[in-house]
Amino acid sequence: MRRLLLPVILVLLVSAGEVPAQRRPARRAPKAKPTARPVGRVRWMKTTAKALAAARKADAPVFLFAHLDKHAPSDAFARKLLADDTFRRLSKLFVMLHVVGDAEKDLMDKFGVQAYPTIVFLDSAGEKVYALDATATPKKVSQYMARTFLISMHNSGKRLKDAGRVRRAFVKFKWVEALGPGTPPAKWSARELRRIQADGIKKLSQAAIAKDEKDYLKTMALLDELVYEYRGTNAGNQATRAMIKLLKEPETARAYREVVRRQIAERKLRYARRLHTAQDLQNALIIYWNVSRDYPKTPAADVAAKRAEGIVKANPGLVEKTRAVRLERDCRHWMEMARAFEMNKRPDKALQYYRRILKHYPDTPWAAKAKAERDRLLAAKPGK
Image (cartoon, rainbow, N blue to C red; front, side, top):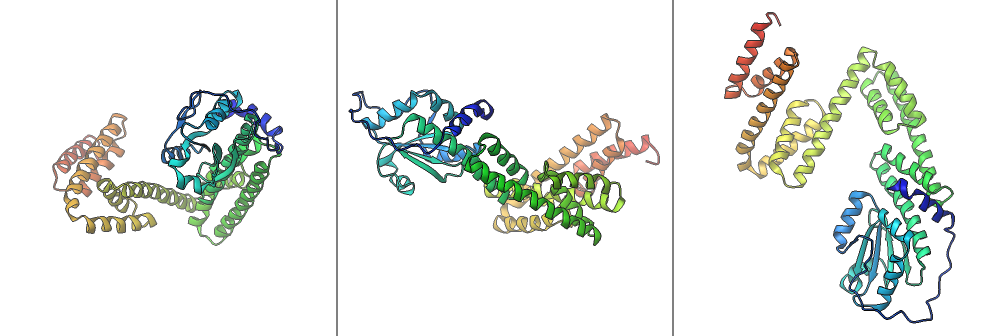
């Protein structure tokens, strides 16, 4: 959708010099039957909380139309906007929200709305960017929509960068540069891109120093971050070449496998935390236990063990039921994996899964099945 609307945005930005405020028309608003909300070929949301949640999820800016119920000027302004083809097309880039002002006084105070109708432009995080009153023409509204779209994308990139998600931030900033050349958001994004390049070079130097000090775990962790998060930058390209070379050396290759193991453990830990926050305690506890068991001697395993202990202390009655669910889930999955490897003529991998059941769940019916399958494979291939 952004690519389809790119020509519209560019045209609006080229002509988006400061538009002088338009005087209120001298003629009276045409008489028409008042409506409770704006209508037209635009999808409006009526609940602020849902609109802001949708904006965060879609990473889209918000067009907030504050009006009054059965208010002729509000209805006239809405009809004027909805008759404009450019406005309707740009609305597809926004979460469109209309609010009856006297029913949302706290929200109106927050955004400084004092008269109706008023348009408030928000970025995808719900922060105010611009506001326009009823004197704005449809052309001016569309221009401010284009500006808000770029600012929202830039702000999103900043948040991603601050959260360490440099790769996605890099893409956001590149989009702003491409969509709005010469505009303030494009200049801000260009500055952020230069900072990303500088940060990448700094991390590359840190990786080189760590290698000289034979801290191969740190070396490979930094290079892996550069290869993934800084793709497309000079530092990312250099890190890729260095990684290919170092993976041929036993010590650095072993360090890289440990880096990957820790990353997998961290991903599982983050998922368990989300479940924990959502109060899905049984599944969160199972994953905490699994991280602690399957990824020993990692930072994630230590955190998982502490969090699991906290759930157990607060919910002692949950433990036995959760252990039974975990046993059934693990053993069923491992048996299925072992049989799949057998079908693909990989008895060595199948044996690993049978032995895993015997190790973690001895003296269970699943262990008896796994032992029979293991003995069958070993008898078929003596010495294996």
